[in-house]
Image 1 (cartoon, rainbow, N blue to C red):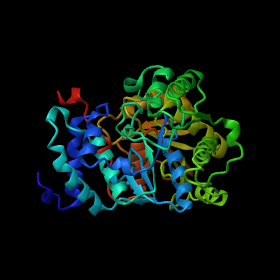
Image 2 (image 1 turned 60 degrees about the vertical axis):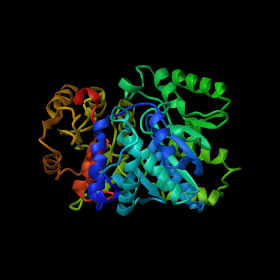
Image 3 (image 1 turned 90 degrees about the vertical axis):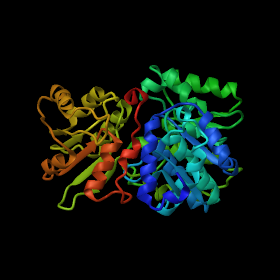
Length: 432
């Protein structure tokens, strides 16, 4: 299709939707080749590469805030998006403009014709290169670069960063990354480059041993950040939870390591952390009619434990309502059992995804884990919101997709376009 066939943002988004048919593939060959066809924009940029199971987005937001406060032009690449595709590509926390998305799609589409259909770049590979092109064109001083899934074979791993950051290692995406913490750590540690410093807050001994070994093999100096180092950190009040102190300590360790290359003053660090905002992660909003809603994308067991700790510390009031929806490929029984004792009323919902877990199956687990709670399966999120409107405190969690839908329904979305479906990909077995 010719470049002039992309006159509108909706047409460009439609093209991006079509890329879902190529599923999710692991390997760097296509991304390297597509980037080379685009002029290797990654060679013109500096990166901090961030991997890990949980806390990647918050850590990226903190790094971005600190370096922006220092006067740099900072690119931010994250996934998934909550509402709008444009959230994935930001400069100084300004979402990429719709006309820029149209232009980038138009420019990259002819390059895709040089690939055979059975080796066509995936949605994530294409978007990764689009982001590189945009950041290079915009002459970003630094790019905070979050992995999509894993690290070793993730499309983002075609860059050589100034520093690599691994937040933590926990069980998630076992079907892709492995069924032990050691195997998962090996995939995350794949972002470690020869001689490039690496920072981690990983505590699990099995995972830490792998990261230490990879660091030694590649001559990459390793800095460990431990919970006691986080006790002096005070991030912005909007970032609830003790885990955010550890994320902040991790981000600041990376900043310290890079001081010789990118100096940042103490007052700039404080200003950067004070201004951090990261929607959908322990995000507290006030309901128009009174009461509060807590939104958190606790999509794995470790995330649910973190949510539970913050819930018990900050919101121990009785009568909480829990609205929960999850993807079927997650350990949703484990998440349900962790959160069930905290709520007096529990409403389960389907997630707006082809991979949603069944709301009635979720409700069964909640009933068995908390027999005192009133549990009901709802047809959709709107019904659950209506059923919880009189509750003084409502928690919406289980999937970032659900959190994004809630932000949109409640009128608190970070962007105006409902494009959550772009987070989906269609597995090869589904195509067959």
